[in-house]
Image (tube, rainbow over all chains, first blue to last red; front, top):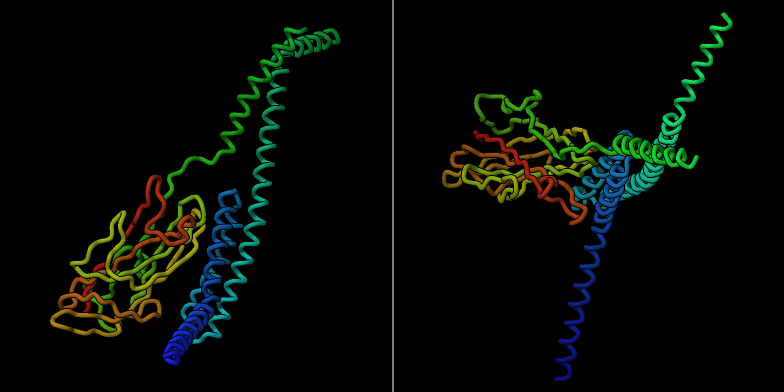
Length: 160
Length: 197
């Protein structure tokens, strides 16, 4: 009786062990492609953020072409997964490195865009305040300018 | 003197307000209607003449090179996906809110910057036909991938491709049908009828 229990327990143990190994193996195999997909989405989110923060059209176009190349590699990795695991992993790692580079560039572009926007806003509002002060001064002192012009005209007439 | 300073301050405040408003207006992005538009084009670059022969007949082994032109006017870069399905005359149509119900044959994805149009190729060929009780089932190669749709058509007549545009939604971390409209998502499906000979 005790032997039976032990045997059943052993079989159960073996089944659980083999199941866990197979799950680990299959998830390990797809990890590269999964990683490539998640890195691509992460890069897209950062590029979209840079775009919303005012990055230039040329910078976004360049990042988009890098993302499209990373997508092409990721699709190749997915297609080759069942046929050639080594080639699939090579494409997946190429995709990951391109996505990472795009993410890094997007962060830098977003930071530049933010600075540029802030500087533009600061410059525009500074000019508005200076122009406001100049205009106020001009309105208040306009009679002095006309006096000055009149005096200059008189001096010229006297000289003639 | 005090009166002059008060007038100067009042004028300064008024002018600054006016000029700041002008600055704000010039710095603001103009309001735009966000949308995505697309079409399926024949090899001649038109929205017609998809088939080389008469009518909408496609013979086995005949390669058709179509392409989609997807235009992004959403205000930022989009991750778009074209989903293709094969249906027949009885299949439920995808509409502005609901995608098609027939199984998906495949998809093509692309990143499209704002205010740009991307081209997605769609090359397909019927590689084999199988007739079961008057229903014709076809096997195709689409963009190099072999597919065997489960949908057939009576005598091979009135098959149709459904094309759907999906966009990546970062909130749900998945592709969602259509694009994000003002209040809800907007689906813009396309379809092309054909007969298999």
